Length: 490
RNA sequence: GCCCCGUUCGUCCAGUGGCCUAGGACGCUGGCCUUUCACGCCGGUAACACGGGUUCGAAUCCCGUACGGGGUACCA
Image (cartoon, rainbow, N blue to C red):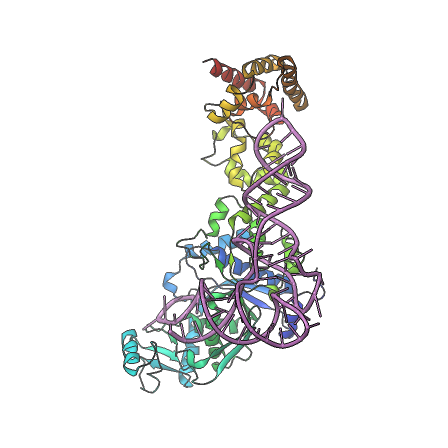
């Protein structure tokens, strides 16, 4: 299914015969957010499209913060989305020796040096020297010895410019004199992510770095380190536009609704989620937005990713999810919705739930919902023992303002008293016939379905009654009609 | 402050010098269908940030301005 002349093909040649190797490198912050998920997806799409490998690497440089729980909080949603990785998860923390060795090499070769200045001292010196805030290489020639609290800084060239060709953003240039001698090893001896990143990407043979634009500014530093370590050609970079909120700010876990796990719980389908995520910053050339992942993989190309930030519109997600739900087979739908149908907070006694009934009515439910969590509300009246509450406005409209509602219910009850409730068409014909007959007799339009619906379901709207009535059965139907009849009188 | 990046309907995506009186999707909205609610179908709504160039011709190329975002940590 490789597309001849497809977008991704040209770039393969750029890297010679080696097949692409990409990585998704999340920090274990406690959960996966949609922006990260989108980055993971684009890495995966690129790997699948090009026949490359997708590697998962947990960026736990600050090992103290990592727990198994935090890692699982990232892996679980990735698995749920179906973003299967070919290698990993690898842990950056386990490669510390390699990182440290790289730092030592840079120091030994004079490309990095020790510094014992505190942030306060740095700012003070900047002020005294009349220079802009920040570090200006003050420890370069001070001959500071290593020791507790001493950091290692990389000696950034005073002259020159780092230039790179970003696959999505094009040519990016950064002058070296705007980059300060940055820290590559902390005072406690631990390497920072910049150096860890470079060493790991090199050792893992990463060919393409695909990630959020918030990391665009680290590229010059990373390339400088890459060159200083003599690693040869650095990976190709592709920076994806950020996902933003309504206020057009980068999605943040503090104020935005971004945990992927929440979407799981709220009844979104993983395939729909993937489809929706794929549409942020990219679009298929033929404009067909909702389509199978196989086609998305085939059509995807990094070069076609756009540069401007995207707002993750939940309305559109709802629509896409609704389309996926409609496309499911009834069986698949009932299985997928089972967690909601059998949940402790389902709107019926757990023992009353009948998957056979749910299956029979699935299609009617599927076309009315956009998330699985909405499903139970359409079937509750079938699994509840009796209707204890009526929606008042529906009652008013169908029973009080409805014409001859009492007579309608009486006649339905009489007509169905001996029905075996196995033939939905006959049920429909009987009930509708009563409405038609009364309309003729009274000379006004008489609705028979509306009062019946309120009697049976307690509401004015819902799935078609007839098939459902065969499952509710004669006894319960007649009992509910009688109950409603009594309520009219009393 | 400094550095980097971006700017097409409310939102997402298309458009890579003429096919654009700018297209599709979501949303919103008018109608049809329907003895419920939906689905479905038909229609409408609404955008090239601004100013200069380049060109016979610019949403598309160049410059500037404005606005927005990201970065600027011993966080990743």
